[in-house]
Length: 215
Length: 144
Image 1 (cartoon, one colour):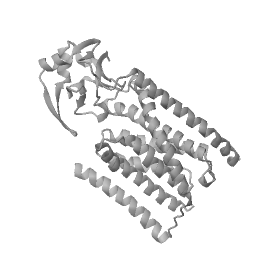
Image 2 (cartoon, helix red, strand yellow):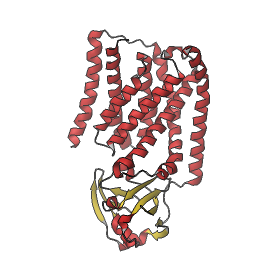
Image 3 (cartoon, chains in turn cyan, blue):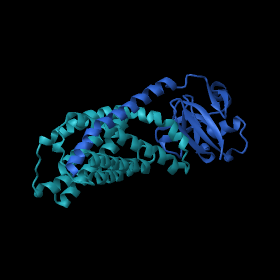
Image 4 (cartoon, chains in turn yellow, cyan):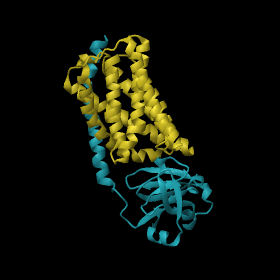
């Protein structure tokens, strides 16, 4: 695949992920919904799996995490921005490691439903826990300069328990997303770059606009 | 090579999924068995001793602080620590422990910009929301 096409794809999917973390996540949280769980088990998984299936390129999901994390850094809501940004980047990295190790890039060969559901459960669980632990470790370190390992250890059972719902959600989201392999989307270059980069730009404008309004 | 190897790895994935589900279910059972959802007692433990929250709120004056989540009313944490008799408070660090096991540790400088509210929660002006611990059951005072 053309590297420029992959880069544009990485930017658009990373921006969509970042947009959902910055704008949709807080909206869900305001309505009392478990935003963190939905963000990982639903939004992140759909964007990560769909982009992997569509582009079949190694390293793309790490790049998406970097872009989504950068966008999250500019979002003024929700406390330690740098910690949340790094947590999203860690999620992209963990997803990439798990899927590189367990699958080939051509996901159309993944026909076994048990494998699809299991992959959804395992990757959602690990990605959620990874992001959560990174946030829990970095927030005190960056805010106060203190990192008390006992604080993290005492909360681990809660993190492991909360990740259960994310795993179950991932067990549904991932097979459904993988079933979209039969949808063939082809855009000619003339429309591909304006469509992808235009969508990414809208995501950035909305998040940055939200930030400026808040200031 | 990779196709065969990956095929084998695909077979391992259900076991990995099973393991994380067992960890998740085990942790859920563990926290339901050991931790309460909220502080239903009229006391909190400060520096190892139980303190009546009713007397705290009767004897100490409250202050209002303006956070990015609106105005919050509570007892200033520095006043609370002085009230329980801690000498040289800047030589200690303070851990707020919630009923679900969540805890955060701060230093004296942060305590001077925080409050403890009647619903057993702390708010800080200069710290991330992660430090706004809910359902506090204990404030641990440890030497730095």
